[in-house]
Structure formats: C-alpha cells, structure tokens
Length: 138
Image (cartoon, rainbow, N blue to C red):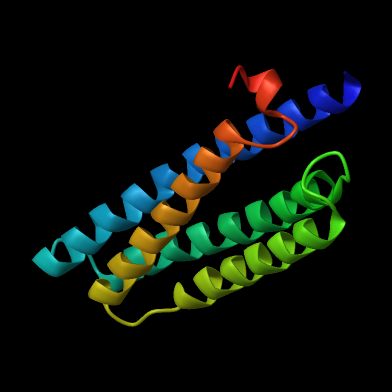
C-alpha cells in the first residue's frame, strides 16, 4: 500500500506541474500574438520562453527521476520494456527542450503545440495505466 501511495503522490505532483506548464504555454502563445501585433517587443516573449524552458527542464528532471523506478518496477511493466519507455521518454523531453530554441513565432507555436500534446499524452497515461491507477480511482 505504501508503494501505491508513493506512486499517487508522484503522479499528483507531475500533473500539478503539467498544469503550471500549460499556463506558461498559454502565456507564450498570448505574447507571440502581441508581438505579431506590435504591442510588445521581442524581449518580453523571449523572457517568457526562457522561463518556460527553465521550468520545463526542472520538471523533466523530476519526472524522469520519479518515473524511472515506476516503469522499472517488475510489478508494473517489467524492466526491459520499462527501460525502453524511459529512454524514449527522455529523448522526447530533450527534443522538445531543444526545439524551444526557435526564431519565429510560427515555429514557437508549433513547438508549444507539440509540448501541449506531450503533456496531454502523459496525463492520459498517468490517469489510465500503471501501478498508481488504483490510487487515482481509475
């Protein structure tokens, strides 16, 4: 039971971070619109994207630390499959992080959309599967 409680706490923490990231993504979208209208200078958008990058990097490190033991737990997906999932997931994180280094608002919006989709997929996974699902009422 303690293991399920730890899993639930970890998933709850990650989902709360996802909500914060979504708010930052929305702010970046808003500032990109304002920049295109000439209402702000590029520095305001650059600052917000930098905040998003820093927050995302910290989140990814935390998520990778928390998910590795969950996915490598033999009671869940098994170590070989879990290791592949962790490696693929880490590569996805790195790709999105690098892609945030964009030069146009169109490229930024594409990356922000990909990040939203990534967070949505993680939330669906957290809500539907894994050893924590009983604790989440799934």
